[in-house]
Length: 485
Image 1: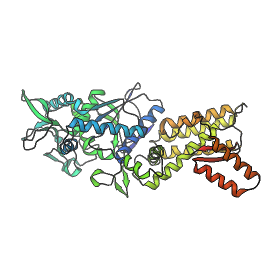
Image 2: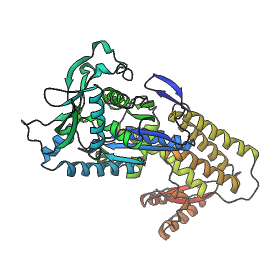
Image 3: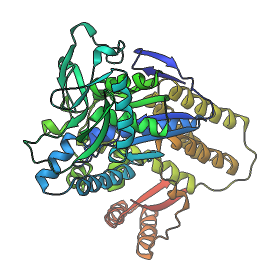
Image 4: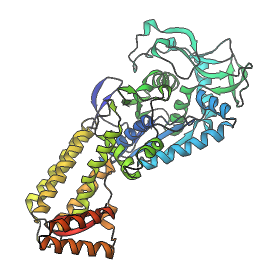
């Protein structure tokens, strides 16, 4: 398996630190509002990476934080006149509702960073003792980027122009502002902050208690160290986190452990709207709820969720792509191929003939090509091409009525194999045993009789009536039947 490693900007063969477990970390949400679908793209990407690795046989353990202490969560809790926990727990639940709708699996280890204060204080104390951190005049503690000689590597910055000894206490900032970053923020008496956390820090062999809160970057280091300790195999999320967040994670974690923090860094790119990055700051974003409301008369909820999942797999993770409602509608229409093949399989007449060598070899070919594309830097667009080619192959042989019962079972297994990563097929179709209502059955019989008598006008009218009642007529080599839309 190969990834494009952000650290080297090259495609590299994946080799785990230890064969018995692959440790993967990805950044969690900042729960101050609904996640927009640009955020959710990053979690679909993370889910795809984890599913692929497990599909390929790796034993994976995942960890994710919840950024419940942050400039934005504190700001909005004050704005709404609610305590921080009430606000962040509300939006954390809504975030998990969203990822469940998109069939994104939860991380194995999840921790709000408010539960990791002790770990953060421990790391900061060590950084103070080794002079990587210092107390500033405002009583906050900052990381000295000049002390960490590899600070530039992940973001590929020019260390020469960085503003060392110039401090910045914002959680997020641009490359042009690269400077010493805050590890622990001191309480500002000029502001009526409703939340405080206490940190006990050793400075010149004296204990000093500093009240307020940790900075953003230290929390992910603490979460990793709690669950994975000094090294992980893969750190991932979206490209905007390369700088400053991930670069700062590396600086503080490697200064603390003395080891390479993450062996591989993988970043997904942006979801765009009209060629602009989707962002709350630009007010050009959509939540899943926005999309459901806008498309409620055109698509079902399942079509929206799986359609959006498919859209993400149709693009390479290291490429940005535009979201539009037309594209979502097209993706939902494309997904009908997945449902139709399962319906055809369900209605295929059983045959107990022996399977052919040709079918066995064809099945092996499609599986092998699918795996090859996933192993080649998670090439989901080409992996999907293999899936559609396989569906075309199956349809041709169903039309020819040549598959045996055993071969049909193999085909279902292949589709389930594809689904381990994609999660786009609804295999409940194979199990459903819904009876056709008497009224629909009678209309279908009348239409068949009308066609037999060459009364095509009446046959068309009966077809339209059946469609109006929520059923489609399927007329293939296995006979005429109706299926619910």
